[in-house]
Length: 111
Image (cartoon, rainbow, N blue to C red; front, side, top):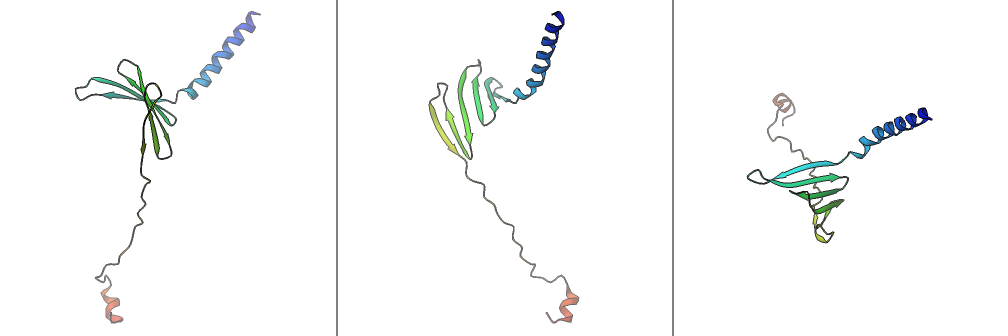
């Protein structure tokens, strides 16, 4: 019976060690004021960012879907929406140099 309990404890410990890296995917940013005072943190997990004040109190969240971010207050009330413009793709264009780089070719073919 003792061996069984030790086996279960070891098995649970291995399972926790295996699962722990999967759950630790949040990224935290510390926010400081102009005089270096702690203003709070922003923790990003997936497409949601959680904002906390300097005392650790919840001050709001922001959820991104596509190019739109929805901002909510500490009680879950809708604060606003921010939409990022779609990226503009500029195709490179080529304009030949008006001055010839092949004078020999030009002299042969009268260009």
